Image 1 (cartoon, rainbow, N blue to C red):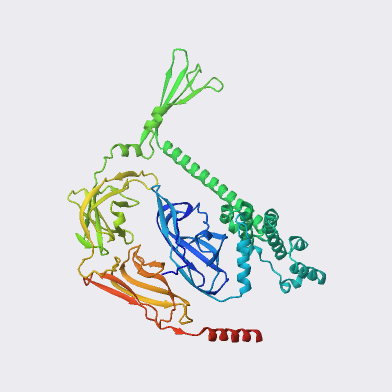
Image 2 (tube, rainbow, N blue to C red):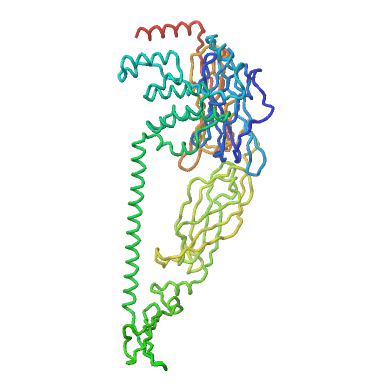
Length: 637
């Protein structure tokens, strides 16, 4: 597919710090028809379940031909895009013609500790003739540059020399000094100005001089003054790259605190003070609430004690002391306490005579039960629960939908307040379509039991035989008050059920069948350009609309990568978009694409196809004349 100049990697590029399962990679440029030397943005996405927190952008310049491409490794950035981890690089084509950016192979660590690899796609670019002086300057920089010095991105070096935007706040002398500084830019020349644009210019010149410390200080002071902007972020990354001599990225704390750092210092201080005030108010309200709850509990305890019956006994000891014992008996239990006195009268204890007071702890905690909770726990038997799992279809084809019915025969005095969890050993071979549906309970053979039923819509995505499942959850007793009830764990252990998922029939199966099972499927084609020159790259988007199942790894032949997958409310894929690159080599129409699929309703294989869009070729001379006419019109305006 690619040209002869494409580089075959001898070893995979290591994704340092990445640990995960199966990954997919895709690569694309922001434009595919440019001039030699024009800057392009290369995007590499990694999709799948993996830990990308420690991902450091790898260097790509050594994996491509320097005669074909100039890759600025120091411009590498990382970002999260939807469900993908994204890397971006600044890239320039170095020669004329159709140049293919090679497929990249990356290695990472699997969850089992072994090495895994993922491969991206090739990308064609039509590089047209550009200014030769630009190409020569790029070549001289590549040949004279030191390998130990990182090649910084162009953005941190760029400075503003437009005096019109600053004229309103400048005197004539200041404006003259500004123009003089822009004519011969240096860090000292821009140091005399105090506005943000001049400070960015001063930092850019410091980076050019290799003085990363001065540039970092300027960026930090400017950030405190006006807030963290994209220009300041790029400058900080460039300064860190210059400091370490290797590609760097924005520190994590700056990424996390980006909303706060984007504010100027006054708003930043106001935000911090307001946050502390809100937290203090919340803690004060929480303290008031806890105090109110404690008072209510104490009042409830006092009222329960007041309603109880109190019996007092008086005992005279041998030493002349008197012991008073009170027994408080209520509807839910009893507790006792006693006090002693050395009063000779034998009556109430006298003040200042050494009164002793004590509560009998064992009686208090064993007998005092104002809500009757302990007695209810003691008479509760362990409930017996039996589970059954069955399918409405004992045998289905891969991709066909069916329902699993979970039946739980259990006593009526318990319930699963938070629902139950159904775990299937064949989970990777099944796809659940939405949440489980609670059906109406039915009477059990045991008159004290009820059969609770849950329906799970499922789809088989791979052949297998037999179901192995377990049910878990927490049950509560129905008569308990919601605030005081206790949840008890439950697990059924692994059980089995009869079921078979069969692959689609082999009779009539196309050679390029990729596992798509759907009742209907349609394919549409969209081209980013229809009027082209010879060798122009046309980016084709195929939109596959299905009512059924498409495997996650499915990709039609000759497409570059999957771009987007949309699912409906039940979890079924409804639209999938694929990208394809076509080099206009004089063919009058775009190539056709076919997607075979199995229709379980008609029990037959069918095909969805698209393509054959007509292209209009225009000569390079007419295109150049049209562009020149357009530029002249813009100048007249």
